[in-house]
Amino acid sequence: MSKRRQRTRRSPRITRRSAIALLCGALLALFAVLVPIQTALYGTPLPLAFILGVALCSAPLLALSRPRTAIAQFCAAAFALPLFVVPELAVASPWPWSVPALITFVLFVGVVTFVHGSRLGVFPLAIGVLCALTAPLLRAEIVMTAGAASSATADMIVTASLAVAMYLIAVLVAARARVGAELNREREHSALEEARRALVEERTRIARELHDVIAHSMSVIQVQASTARYRLPSLDQEVAAEFEDIAATARGSLTEMRRMLGVLRTEDQTAELTPQQGIDDIPALVDSIRRAGVEVGLEIITGDAPPVAPGVQIAAFRIVQEALSNAVRHAPETVISVRVRVDAAAVHIVVQNSAPATTILEQAPGHGLRGMRERAQLLGGTFGAGPVADGGWAVEAVLPLITHKENP
Image (tube, rainbow, N blue to C red; front, side, top):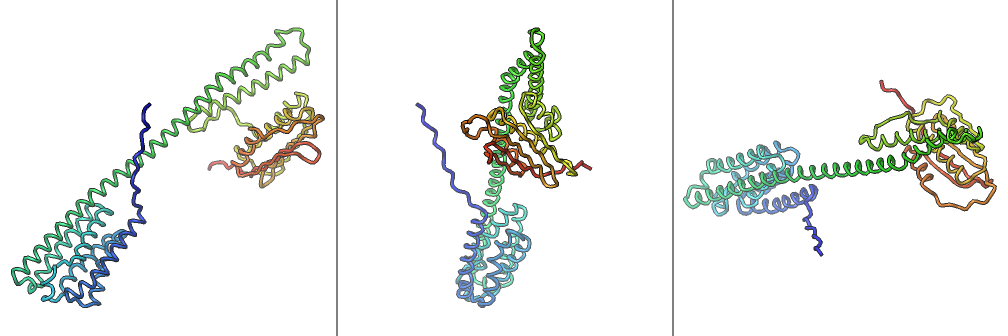
């Protein structure tokens, strides 16, 4: 027995919000360290150290939305910070970049490069290095001795090396993130295509089953009913007329079946093989029920209502058709009334049958009621079905009136 392949757990990805939160925390920590160090170890006045520290540490966060402004702000602060120092103190400490300033510089280069690309990331890297090179020229007294000059040179080399390394890492990470995002989009597209293909295959299978089984059986019924008067010459006229009605109903069902098969085999669901039935076709539907010996009353009130959209027309016809079918099937030999009223707001449908002569066992709701309810709900309407006071059964539906406007 083959072992089930275990899924590899992926580490949770850092979201944009959490990344910004981490960046803010790091910048606050750097600011909290930079100002005291710059004041105590380099002799920078506290107000000036505070202002330059704010400009330096807020630049990476500002770079997320305004990179050019952030680059100008950072470079101005990085240029001024090593100049306002006491030479005797600066000689004993890393200069021109203090450790917090160095870390902030490296972080700034990484943020700009990762968020805005390698081309824009070159500018803070190059300008920051040039600002550091100008500091010994403007404050030559700090690097008068060989030891101080060597210390300043080593500080600039370390800073430049770390900034270049961060730049390259940010370029690689950004490229990997772009490739990952592209792969995710491709996976989503592939999943959508797979779902669409599965849907098309399922619809094709249903269409094939309907064509091979149901349509074939309906064709046989239609042929047998149409040829009954010729195969059985002794049939009475009334019986022959019944067979003709059966054949007409079968032909109508085949037409509906062909339309349904066309829709199932059309991927964009826009096939219209025959005109759709609507409210105007309800009288013909009622007449077909009357020919079967069922007493059906019909009342259609339209008045001055505007034209009804095709979707509402189809839903109204199908609800009446299913309600009549249920009444004939579950409450035979009863009187059925159909009332359809169209006003300026909605189409109101009431199909009600009288109490049956014999007791009918209560049945659980089937697919017919669910289908009528779904049709009404898809249009934003309401549907209800249940017993009435006189012992009969009533189906009521309200379909919001969506007027059909011609395209200009």
